[in-house]
Amino acid sequence: MSPSPEPTTGALALDSVDGIVERFRERDYVCDRSLATAVFLGLRLGRPLLLEGEAGVGKTELAKVLAASLGSRLIRLQCYEGLDVNAAVYEWNYPRQMLEIRLLEARGEADRASAHDIFGPDFLIRRPLLQALEADADSEPPVLLIDEIDRADEEFEAYLLEILSDFQVTVPEIGTVRAERPPRVILTSNRTREVHDALKRRCLYHWIDHPSVEREIQIVELRVPGVPERLAEEAARFAAELRSLDLQKPPGLAETIDWVRALSALGRKELDVENVEATLGTLLKYHEDLLAIRDEALAGLVAAARG
Image (tube, rainbow, N blue to C red):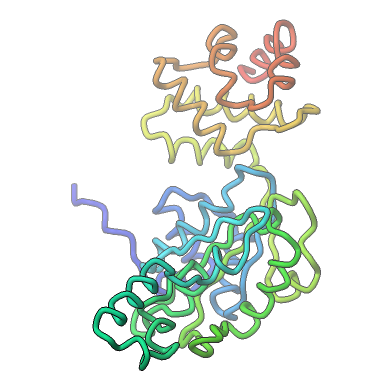
């Protein structure tokens, strides 16, 4: 039996919706046609793609798989409250600048030194957004992942509008840095707050929902090689049952995969109340949810998942 071919990389590998579905599956990412269409249009039109959905449905993973499929670099900006230009775009390397000043003084050149001697590209610390704009024009454009934009302040979101509109940024001491080949941009949001309409207008939009039971089974079998078929089916049904309940944080796809790995590590081939109860913390992350799923409720969920 001949070995399986290596997954194709480069933009040509993703030149159709079917090609995206196929290439993503080669990298263990099961992508439905609607999501594949959004990715295809983002690539073809050169537009940022905003992905919204509950935590753990595969938004961040999509950006990683896209970069791998294109054979390009993934540059990730993790957003958080208080994120500013220094952390997202650039800042000056002050210790190195001070060292340069000391060297100039030691050589007796301090009087002739100008701002250009310490405010130049060699003293610039490039953060993710500037890295993405300065990418080598001869290589595949990077995939810029702006992760959890809903966690950033609205002021930073407004600053981001200019970068995503013109793919350029101005460093006062140096000038304007403009991308020769704009990066492919993926933004994600868990919708902890609404993203501003002005940012949404600059993006293509797609909502990623929890997968159907059938698709979740496929994903689990891909991501957990060798998992017993019965365990994958029952785990997917159990997770779907949990999502139908009024929980603070229903499990995402990522939690299902972790849970199946835990059950496989314990040698389980199907669900039983004892082992589900022992591993439930892999699925649920809030104490109140764990308390709600116990005793008769847990037994009923396991019975439903076992069919």
